[in-house]
Image 1 (tube, helix red, strand yellow):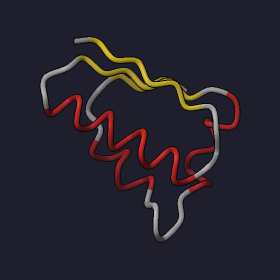
Image 2: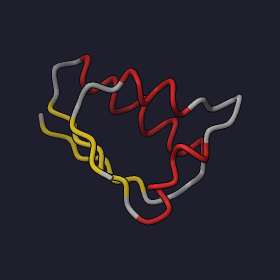
Image 3: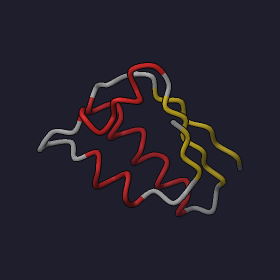
Length: 66
């Protein structure tokens, strides 16, 4: 299955959970692309101790567009 995830917010919890979903898709063999739009391009600045966005980004092996 092909999956496109569009992230257009800088909310840490939302980005974190969307990336977790993307990682699960990759592990199941799906073709996953993530596109950051609007405030989503600030994802690196949105990381918090509770929602470590950098950690989940490093685990993602699909296509990533900013």
